[in-house]
Length: 73
Length: 205
Length: 170
Image (cartoon, each protein chain N blue to C red):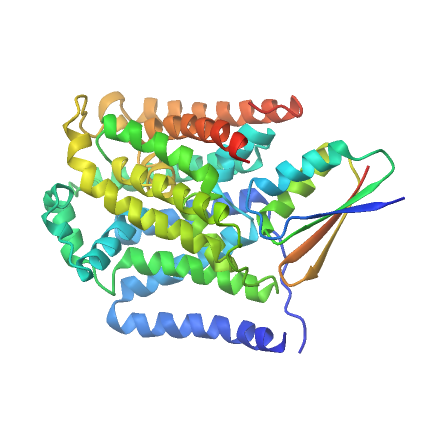
């Protein structure tokens, strides 16, 4: 299983979720996408979207104010 | 890393010290500072954003914030009603934000709504993001400052356009019961609409 | 150094209640709810005076209420400290939850241009409408002012327009 990364550091709402959606849609089944963002609001946006789409995800704060969300398709 | 922890420990006492200092000059301003601290804290923890209440509902069908804003509006409408009624009864001037409606209002709201999308937030969010450390929002703030001056400069021209209505205090026109009932029905109705819109699934306008 | 942790995230509705509570206290203490752009306009006018402009002569500041507000505006302005408090509160919250982190403005000038452009539209629009989302949406609607509802509806339309435009720019 490959994990692709999506670096969204410096991106401002609504870009993080827009690009995450596009990337997840393009992702082949069985693979994972690791999204990195430093925008706190976007973290909630993305995780709520994952819950609504019933996509399992894992959220970690990799450093102060930088989060990684690994979404499993 | 460690420096940040020290700053974190010093931050609350520093905030309190500022309150203390302000108190000597003006107790009211000290209170406003403390209220601001509380508001900022709560809005940060809840990841609030009024811009997102509009924008995310449109872009992503995501209405959690929309409903939270409706809740804030419903609660404050009730408390402001009590405060306003007390003032009216005692003959004091009516407290609150009542402004005239005109072409300027419509144009202004349109520009404001359009602007918050590329800006990445509204005026309130700009403050919140700055507090979080996003330097980009200093640019948004600069834009707001320049825009405000330009808007003030052009204001008379906008006001000269036809269609200016004096401020309308709804209870004065249709009475308190109708106003409150109508507002609560609207808040509730919009909340239901929001939930329905979200449940409908991934659809954006 | 022990980690400083509080329950990290609150649900959205907690923020909604916070706004209602604070605005209620503001109405009781100050006679008016939270507002941002009116204060910013006065502050900007002061800065403009420093570079030689004379905003006090502009038509906008001729209304007695605004003329007074501008001449009164100083370091102890209530609205100024309210909004500084908000920034402070966010800062304290972020430091305590160990999220605070300075993110420098990104390199591509396109992003900065969008930020400034958006800010310009918001600042200009807010002046025309007598306020922004804080003063009008969260302040005028609960004050039972029809203007607040008009603002809310048209802002929604504005966001629709903004999304249409932004989609292409993105």
